[in-house]
Length: 283
Image 1: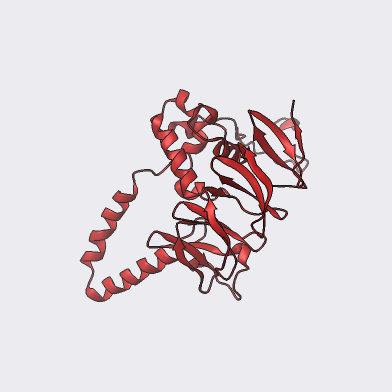
Image 2 (image 1 turned 90 degrees about the horizontal axis):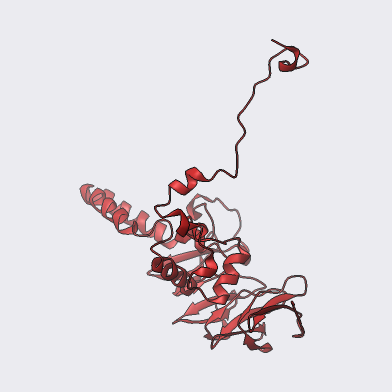
């Protein structure tokens, strides 16, 4: 063996084949859609400006990025609610595509039912209790199930787990339900407030489940640096924690404030906005 193939101690090197992160051929084969459809930019889907901005901010640029995500993955995107998810599903369906896992839920239920029926009454009761426990503690924000997490103290409000029961959502602090399952959709607590949806309108609650800002918005994002983007009548604006309109509803799309500035879109042009409402338009 030549010296080039040995290390300083005289032992031969072990060569390993390098992984090529750009080789997505195998991943693409798992999606049952035409490659041309998968490479379709999301701008060519029937999506609103608000949804497009939200997706692109989370590095979702083509249809394949959506098709590879499950419904649970989608809900991990901050400020993505049921209304937006339905919009995305509809846009994909119009192109003959769908998100990962669509249409498999009924099959799962059908395989579980006979197993429970075959058990004795004692085990059937236990199985039913376990099923109810899993339903109450279902998570969408984390990969780990709540029942597997051992805590010594309750979670802080910004880490509360989303839970679902009877098609409604609430929050769980690791020990008990702190916000009852009564909303159509809930988001995470940020700056002490949480955007929630009820009867297709969005508002904000505090950690005691008090309604701080009434349900009057079509969409409502989490607070950031004291302001939140909300949509009403197809236009976006900003409100403060008291519900006062700080920046009027005149924009087609907007993003949350980060380091003192946000992004707004009007008449097809994007600009940078400050908390006082001053905009520098991008030429």
